Image (cartoon, rainbow, N blue to C red; front, side):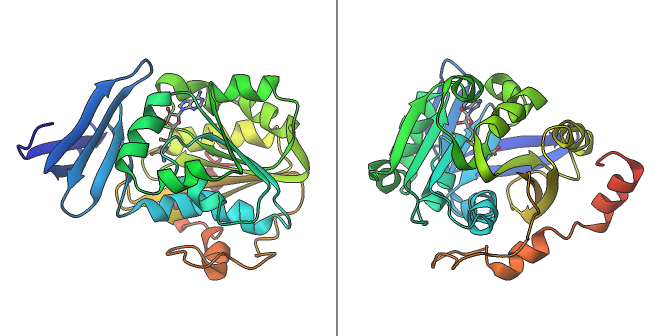
Length: 280
Ligand code: SAM
């Protein structure tokens, strides 16, 4: 497509945000579910944007994908069957495949996200060719209501709570996850920026505490996400050991055993919000 340098902006608040110079818009289209754009940036490489929000970039993807996948997978003593809800860019999938899992299902509502990412993000082709992977094109909530199989680890890699992912940000959805976890199973999800999305985090925490016995926030940096610091949630009905139960796969660039322990130590301003009852 075009070769003219263009500025791509994402507003994190009506008054501020992030911008990129797009050296080349590689694709831009409206799928049935959302606007999909991939552009090339000199520093970040290829950047995926859905409905105007940056989802991933070639350069900084590891921060987010490692932190969504590895805490749950390294804390669970023997993750065999893994479910990813959303995650059509394949970044979390590539991290899950580093473990000797038996099966990984990825349930993505928008087949165009998978196709576009296969073309523009190099990790997709080997991940999709892996025999352990089964792709399901469909709604994550409906999938959980219909499937009979149970999982050791469920990872929710949804987009922001707008458009098709609204149904993935409800207590009812997390009830369905719990119902499909094997005994000792764990789940993790991204819950947004602790700086920009405080109220949303608080609501999620309140909902999830009615579903799981153990609900723990953890954080990690993502340079291109609002605020640069991202929050995740770890869900389980058993104690959260916060320690690695097995050898961590080689080749990771952010996650390690020290990061796992550190990530659950919440920053002072988040602790303050917890005290205020926003995040209980
Ligand atoms: N890391 C990301 C971010 O920035 O928030 C999430 C990336 S991933 C590409 C999110 C995916 O979830 C999208 O491809 C979107 O199509 C998918 N999705 C949204 N709603 C869904 C639903 N109800 N069921 C399954 N997948 C869904």
